[in-house]
Amino acid sequence: MRCKNKGFLDQIVDPSIRDQINPNSLRKFAEITEKCLQKDACGRPGMSDVAWDLEYALQLQQTAVVQEPQEDNASNASGMLSSRVI
Image (cartoon, rainbow, N blue to C red; front, side, top):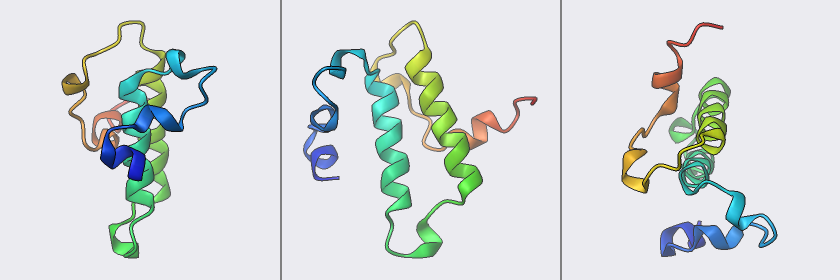
């Protein structure tokens, strides 16, 4: 979380794959991690929310067009993905 807060989030990624990681996906993954590490259990998301958010992070990684950081302003991807038909 120190790297995230200081703006060095990419430093936690293995250098051999760093250039393959979509920055938006990495940011979303860090947001999920931060939510899961909340001291108060009430502040932590449920596993279904974590699963949806991780799927969204994966979708960001798999997108062919890399979005600018400000374009990924979905703070809770579970709301966006819940309408998806499975």
